[in-house]
Length: 395
Image (cartoon, rainbow, N blue to C red):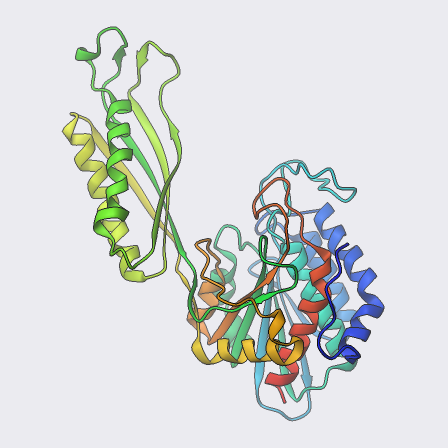
């Protein structure tokens, strides 16, 4: 395992305490990795988390959004309340790492590091119940179904912040390609919105030798894909961000047959809600116009996913200051930029003030890769960070 240099306070008691049980947390993380569970199916994971939290003295509420958990710890007479969230679900990916603790569940893999995020929060939770120096209320939120964009929204709709009120909520994500253990902060838009569209271009099938008797949806689809590039390059302000990707195209099954229809699947991302709305308007209109120009027609199913993740100014400044005071300036990733990936923590930040930060996973395979593995070396510093964030917020 890679090693991260200790904080500028080398004799920090938080570091020493976490180090004393770090091997147990790493073993737990690898167990989660070995037995991954898909969205809303995190029953084993949830049961293990709840058992540990209960044994450490937390008030544990289970069954929120099915498998979600909120653990509460109160100290003193302080009125402030802080929430820390970790996600638990895995992805429908066949793991190819060959690790000794690789997934035992065929076609399911922790390819985004949620096993690590959960373990980081558990490491912090253990310290805080044993040695935490704070005055107020701590809420630990273990969320299901982040990968399908439904977990945060469902927990909120089931009364998450009504039953368990907080004054601010925080979360983090590991990030491959960022130096190991470096912390990244972004004020405002930090991750993009994500929407999806399924477009079916319907023509008239026929023999490949007699195209004049058919209406070719393949040709219409090809023209639509080419024209689609104009949405970002000619409709979106060059100073704004938008991503439009055709990730899937299917039509026909033989080289000499013109199919009846072609189906395309798209994903759209943006930082601004106004750009998101622009994409929602232009893409279906372009699909229909392109199809009609070839004598075909387009059926469009455009579905909104989740909004851009917008970090609140004061909470982000606070979160960055905690990292600076805990680890020193050298551990803050300078010029850290927003990510065009998406995250359903955005819904929590719509409901409550807070911030979402990033921790470098080093030179690992990218997220959502069959070769990805969370780097256990960042568990201790990230848990240390959560401890200091809680203790500073609840002084």
